[in-house]
Structure formats: structure tokens, C-alpha cells
Length: 158
Image (cartoon, rainbow, N blue to C red; front, side, top):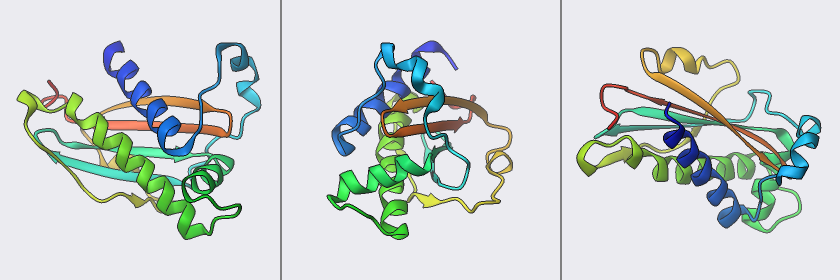
């Protein structure tokens, strides 16, 4: 993935967390404490497929504390239910994916974003997106870590 793609996707994710959840990335001076943050364990993954002008998908794997904070901040509640947490993570994935796919669309054609869903614990997403380019980035927030994977067809990327 070119630095341009990586930087743009990271910025889209950071902006989405800031605007939607009132969450902010760690400052440079806080990064050395990043090792102590709650890390994703693969149990809270939201998947969004896209097709049309570009084909692929996005997976957001959120740490336990982060998914709790996303739901609490988006819904204005102290303790969210499992369904509310999953719904909030799916909405974040949908927003980030929706703002990312134009990067891969040829000639500004339309991409169709499919409804986000939660991946099952044992779901092998690597095989779901086989033969696609896979790029991964990480967003470090005060509330936890989000691992973001983007899969796209390199033939279709502009």
C-alpha cells in the first residue's frame, strides 16, 4: 500500500473516531505508553464488503475497552449491551469504509457498500478475501486500539 493510501485511511479513521465518538488519537509523547493499551483479540471484528467500481472489504478489530467506549460515547450510556456495542462498532466500520472506498474507485465511479456485520470468532477472513491485496494499520486511541485491515482488488485500484 502506498504511503498515500495508508496516511489517508488512518486520517479517515482518526476523524471518524473524533467526530462520531469524541475519541482522540494518542499524542506523540503518549505513544511510548501505547504498549500498555488494551489490544484487540479478534473477538470484536466488524466486516464491511464493497463492490462496484472497486471490490474488497474492511475489517475493524477493536479492543474490549475500545468497543465499550465507542458504544457508550455514541449512545450516551454508561453501560451498553452486547448488541449495542456490536451495532456501534458496525456503524464506525461503515463510516470509515464509506469514506475509504473512493480511494480505490476508478474514474470516480460508484462503489456499493454492503451492510456491516460482526465476524464470528472463528471466521477466517483471510480466505474470505483471498487473492486480494491486504493492508493493515492501527489506530491508537486513549480508550484502546483499533486494528484496521483493508482488502482490495489491486487490478481495480486507481
